[in-house]
Length: 504
Image (cartoon, rainbow, N blue to C red; front, side, top):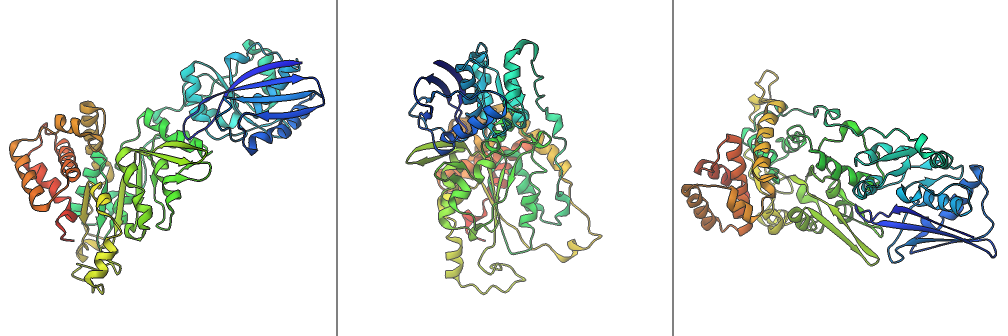
């Protein structure tokens, strides 16, 4: 008869609630029971644990084994508890000492030969363990991501290696994996903005959107450079701050993806195809997993051919665009994921693509054009700060010897300065300012407000559009280095909401 208690954590979204693993050995016919709302993969751990214990040279006790995963009313998934269960059995059967169990948290899926395999969600668990002041033992393949939490992390490749560590813990302290620094990311490389010929107004709009993290929509005929502009946005954005990088990495960790320290601080750029489902975009499934909007957290979500997406798919974006989070609810529970992304979209003005283009022959009737644009609802369009027309560039600009525009590095410097002003002033980008902060930080003069009010009356702007124009104007002023928003800044912000005027 014996009892052992170990610590671990479950995975629910990006949360990592604590789990107490209690192993009780008692007399009676040999049996292995796992209780505590364990799903299939957890219940199957008994076969993996038995094989790993015997392959590691230990004796598997021929007693009645009861494993309780508490709290009993919280769902437990995956093979992350295998290591803790195996150690608990070895402790309860007096084959390994348990004097150091209380201070540790254990994670790892066991192979039948005793090797430790990677588990998903190691980073969120390591963050919570660090907050609690407890060291953790994880598989070697999870060591780098777990070390990002800045807690005390020990890695092992097998059950036998863990038991050796615990037998003489003070003398066998493993070196903690080094957490990557910001310099490891290096400069963001990719296509250069100078490669886009002409389109000065569109480039300016992209610069403003990047500086303030504003959502932007490009609309225009095929081949005018809409997608080219969007694909060059990552090169304009500053690298992520440490807390942003950890939040974004936690989403990838939950999905079980390896985290590359060399790209840790680079902002994600996700571009799902227009055939993507609502679940693929926002997340879901019976065991809710993050979707594209969560994988784009602190980065960019690019929706090319926006009007080709299903209207239902686009409508699910309305709440996360506003709140920066997504809650996925199912009958057996719910999961919360971060989804603070910058939305960048591109679309044609009509099904054939040439409505309003002087050089194209549009074959679409007014009704067809209206139905096509109607796929993007008013409430969703209202949440996009900037929407501009991208016209066809002149043929002269396409010549090989035609002058190129500003390179991405030069534009990125201005954007970085503008972002620093915003964070120094409010601790966030202008796009994230709430109503109270907007009133405090816009600092517009009377002429600016008079211009905005006249435009709001004439164009019948909603209150949301009214505020978003102020945010864009604040960003334009920051790029210019002005403390106050002037009428010229407000006029430029109004010029970047072209769909409000219905002239595209």
